Image 1 (cartoon, rainbow, N blue to C red):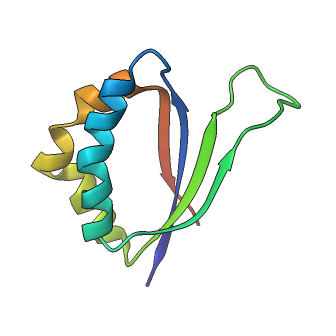
Image 2: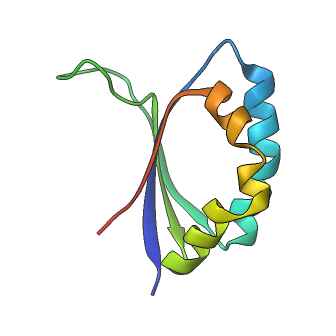
Length: 96
């Protein structure tokens, strides 16, 4: 059964090289896992709250196992430092 994942992120404008490094690996990994980008939004205006993500993306994966394998893979682990530089906020969750 397919599973939806939500990614809520805020870019670090001072680290464009880290973002390039992260996306160069994360993009192909996500594609190989069979993910489909369903929706992508940029936050335009804060109505309430001090900290909200700059971007919200909803992706669909074939099943939860491929998500777990992707995030546990050595390839993904190799870009965690770049991810942590590239984003000031990076949150990912499975949707019910």
